[in-house]
Length: 409
Image 1: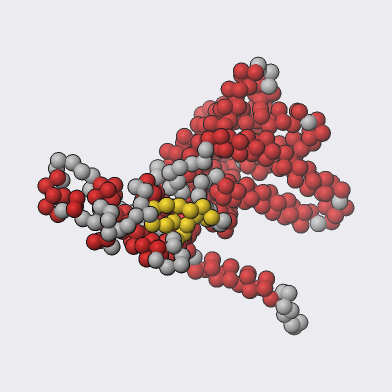
Image 2 (image 1 turned 60 degrees about the horizontal axis):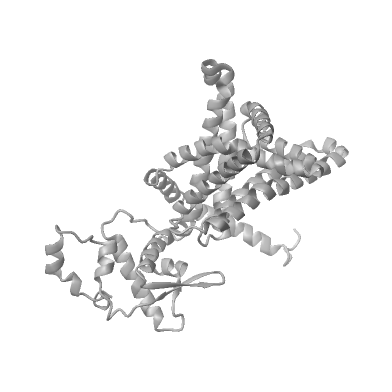
């Protein structure tokens, strides 16, 4: 047996560590988190809304893509490669061809509209992007999304440049395969495996980029990659299952006849958005799952006690050389879900008790008030007990209005 060189050892160590991490991953807690978030955040209803918006924006999106390809005739081969990719990869074979044919015909007719009609189509396509932005920011508990102008520019670049980049990569792979026909004939299984891995990698990269760049918060690449892998695997499984169901159980064809493509397409869109939203939940909760944190969202007064713990840590950090803590440092010190900590920190920032310092690689939070001189009453009103006539006597007997933050820290 040849000795293991120093160049080969790191790869084996990394592979072994990855395998150990997968074996130790809290899969039961992950399933429980997916169930709770799907129910509490009403992700099923959100997927329905996104399905309707996608159906409305499907033709405008294809219209914009066709307009980009039509403006540069040299990219006509890229368009063919892109159509084949969507035909074979993103949609089950049973509905891919009629859907793509119909959408392409509608899009070509839409290009004949006037300037006002094209503006309406463009706004419809951007509305879908903004809906996705709002949904993902909600999953990550982001209260303030990016400025509208910045989001529109980013999404416009994604709509126009994304198909070009994808078409170039697919055309290059198609050219490489056609140029090596002898190799293809000798090893068809190997080439098919390479193509499948390429398609799978493109899906993972697209969803990973979506989870990393869209939420207006710091999302680590490895967490976004976890969500991207989940979505890519989910798409492959759902595509096979739905295609098998449609071929073996001709319910839709019997009921709807030639019109059966539409309900199947709607069902596929809904399943696809459910997979994407669950992948976003995995990416958002990957930090807390890796730390094996028990969520206690429904416990009465949990946000108030968490806010006091955050203020205590920031008060301690104010006196040393750190002068503040990042969101991840706060979550690790409190053994709490970073999303819950971020919600509480947002409330403290709104009260002007905590400030955010933008730094390279993230944000640092610092305490802005003197606990000995700051009244506790605003924090109680915000996170614990809303002032009203019913609780006025209780607040007066306890002396909430006279308490100072330093007394409870």
